[in-house]
Length: 110
Image 1 (cartoon, rainbow, N blue to C red):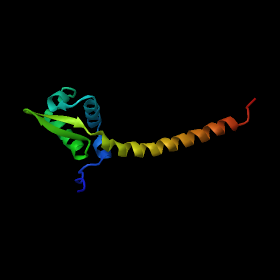
Image 2 (spheres, rainbow, N blue to C red):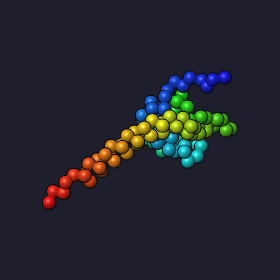
Image 3 (cartoon, rainbow, N blue to C red):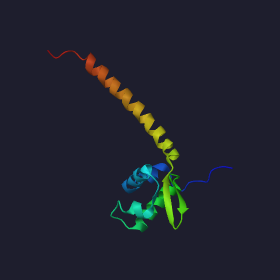
Image 4 (cartoon, rainbow, N blue to C red):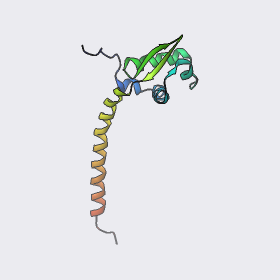
C-alpha cells in the first residue's frame, strides 16, 4: 500500500520561521500544544494551524495521551531537504576551490 499524498511539501512547511522553531522544539522532545505555545507570542489556534501544515508535510505526527495531544518530530521527511542542500554544498565547494586556485595562481603584485 502506498503512502498517502501529502498536502504540503517540506519546502513549503519550513518556509515559515515559526514552523522552523516548532521543529527545533520538537527535536528535543514530544510536546503538547500548550507547551509549544508558551514559546511564542501567538495564540494556540495559530500554533495549531502551523502544526497542521507541518503534519500535512509529514514532518510532525500527533498522538493522544490522556486528554492532550502530543506532537512529535518526524525527521525522515527532512532527508529531501538535506539531499537538495547537498547539491548546493558541492556546488559552492567547487566554486570556492576554483576561486582558491585562481587567487593562488595570480602573479605576485610586487
